[in-house]
Image (cartoon, rainbow, N blue to C red; front, side, top):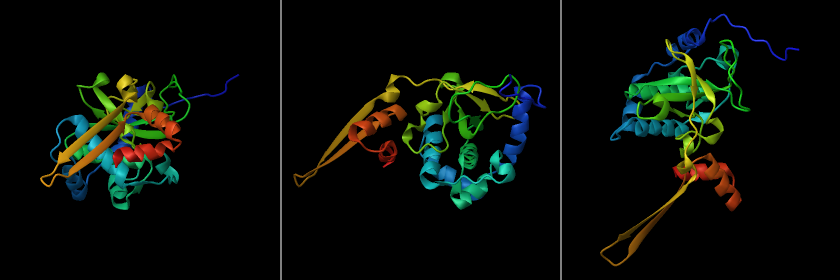
Length: 241
């Protein structure tokens, strides 16, 4: 009769957000080395999106993924500093690292949790159904007041977020405003390809030609992979290179 029963000792989503925030926030303390790395990463960049994506890409490129979940580390991240030093971490650890460095760079960022797999509606009581952590960056210029970056997304399609996560409700871990956010679905531009050709003429009569093909979005990567019969991850890596 009852395939699942949920109960909670939090009265509402705000209390649940405060409870989760109390165990996340102590892990989000930047070391001097982290603050220096963040400052160098965003140097010369303007705007919230460019700075946040630069930090995201630096971590996605430079840190490896390792799922290691003994005890409380199944739902509480290791410290951002330990992830920074080890160059390894799972989705929670890499999210914590990104958030900490984004804050050090002057951005406002918070952890977000979501269920990776089939889309699940939030429970009627304040209990988190989640197995994946991502990053929410506040930005009034964006629809919904901010945007999401997937901590372990290996392609520049992290912004806008990959198609699998769009349209879902994700829980914002916040000390006073814990709540569900709905990630907007991307527009048609998210699935487009963009070609760029630059030709430099030299004094000796020779020329250098630089060709760039950019594919935007998870579906675009998948479509390109099927057309070329290559793995989708290969195209995401090519975007970076």
